[in-house]
Image (cartoon, rainbow, N blue to C red):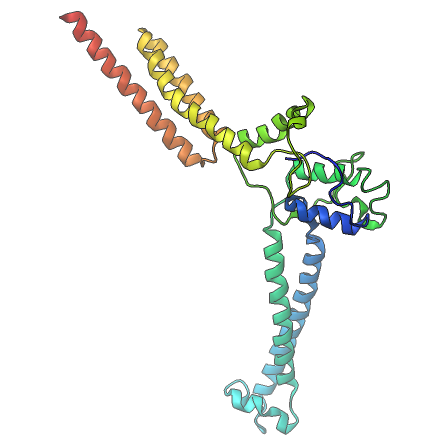
Length: 301
């Protein structure tokens, strides 16, 4: 996460050159449209052409197979005769096959490319907002871009006016919800408090900021400490509570807490959350049962 400092792209012309330079410094801001609708339209047209060619080929094959006088009836039985049909001046079926082959190659390439593009991830909201602010900086001028593509990323005055089919070439690491919240909120508050004064501008990004890796390292420490303290806290509380009804309530509360922590502070899947929560509940139940037996024996001695 970064803020703005002196213009590190001063040697680049305002417009596409400076915008490209910024994307090169911060790859997470390299956002482009997928043109999903146009890709789909292109595929539909190619598909329609192929269907028409397929229909013509089937009709031509049927007509040639009924030819009892010449060699056309052999086309569907032996590729050799079909490949030699040009010698007889009967190339309609072969021409259709060759045209289909070229069109299929074009269609398959377009289909694979569209599938690859469709699986690219959307840009992070922070990076999109960063791009909108960058386009409004004095370094980019009042008219950063003036073409039809000027509103591709939205703007400060219209932050939701960006194209809905934007993707990022290198999206941010998909961390847990807690780390993402810290990165998006705590860092902003650090800048507001003036903490950026104590940091130097990055040599790579040319701006004052906090690296995601640093933030994620801190949140990892926090979650590790919480993971150690929650089980200990549960056992300590259960030890000092004698009422069985209260103990059951405490077990339920700590189970909800551990489940919430797993969901927000980790990337655990649902099955993993269920498994850890069940195991944690089992440990607490065993402790309660053991503690009750020991207490009972102590009172009876």
